[in-house]
Length: 326
Length: 303
Image 1 (tube, chains in turn blue, cyan):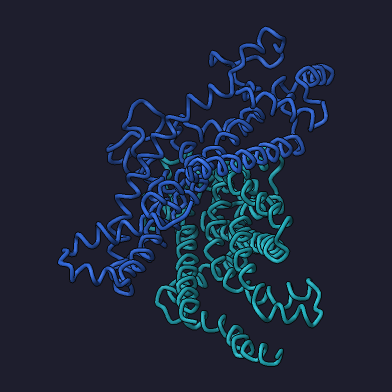
Image 2 (cartoon, chains in turn cyan, orange; image 1 turned 135 degrees about the vertical axis):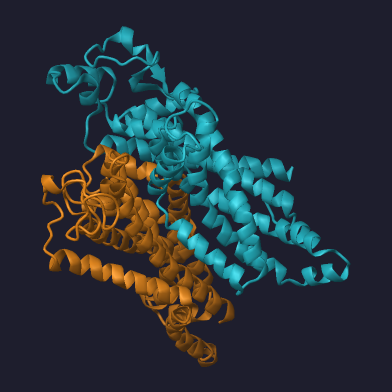
């Protein structure tokens, strides 16, 4: 019952947030200079043709009418069609813009659904790498606050956080795939192509995990139930992994919710560098091509994902720590 | 009665004034802060003095000296180009240091804008509460759920990127976190006696907000903001790398590295050398920021 009420409230709030996001992005895209029709029809197209196409597509209507139409579509599960990308993947001539070709434009929803799994694969592997790097350093640092493991954790996370992802990507691609030929880097032809991008992404995420872990492990370890656990005859490992780690996993989960957008930003740049066919590359191309429906679609989907992840994080946190309230 | 209520606040206010000083001295005592400060000072001095002293023009091309490697690395290096030259024979050291200038300029002004906007919104939301709070916080949530970088590249991608527009976009994309922190501290502070006392004495809302609350709650926020300077510098270079930052021929870390990527196979130093400088600068800022943050947490936990 509590759960149902919690879900209803959070989902309603989430829907409001997604609505605000779409309104924000929608207005922003219409207000900033740059005419997408000019890009679609090509630079040589006459002004009259551009105006005709634009009014055909309803791009000259007032913003709130366009937005109403768009929201109406979304409520029926229709994110619209890409301005630029054809459904079959072939390049289109700009001026051939009559009704027969319009129907062949790719659905925004299909484009997102095709690329999202690739990005998910990258993100999950990156998270696994990040935990692999951060858990030992973070726990060790937290067990000896003020000591040199703690200092080491501080230094290493300061260095990691200072490595710009695009530069690290280039350097590692140069070293590991060009010079040493260990892993493939550019494009995607199999799972091996995910490893290097995921590793670069992991280096970007790891410092935040290390910082959160050191602080929370140190906090938990100074509490009295940890001292008592030793009296109860638990071994040190049992204390660390059952008690300390369980208690510090809640801040870690919250971090995941908060840093989701940072993770996504990293994904964007890394997919661009490694030419990895995911959501990030799609976004960058959409922006470069002024593909308004696609940008809006991606913004809405990511906002929805952000809302959902935060709900899941809160649910998981209450399962781990029943003292927390919904 | 009021005299009794106010007097316990006096020592705490006197201490609040010294808290910033205590955080500084605490941070200054740590090794990482000193290392960071020394490296940072050296780099800033180099960035502000070298292009001016050496009168090497970072945009001057010299095709005959193109693609010469850094000192002691590879064939045909020379002392006149310590970091080598790029594909058009432009001096890499001068370009890198000019890039560093822009990076610092944008990083610092963006952070100031971000903190200012976030603090104002948080202050209003936390002080007035009620409907103002609801509206401002829902706006903050919406802004938080759009990934900052998507917002930034969307705006800069469809409009023309200039230095003020980059600062504006990054600054306006980054404020929500500050607004949240500010709101929660203001909400906690405004219930306290000294605020109620000031209200009874007839102080206006503005007076309470800007002369009582702001000086009290802003310093802890500002110390954490040092870390965001580094984050914004990274963002600036990412934008430059995507071609959405300060436009060439002005050299920035981002566009030098993006250029150098094309010559990675035969001239590795173009893409890697500016990155080394960027990493050094960021590490020094991050070390200082982390030391300040630790000192702040220590003082506030103990105070």
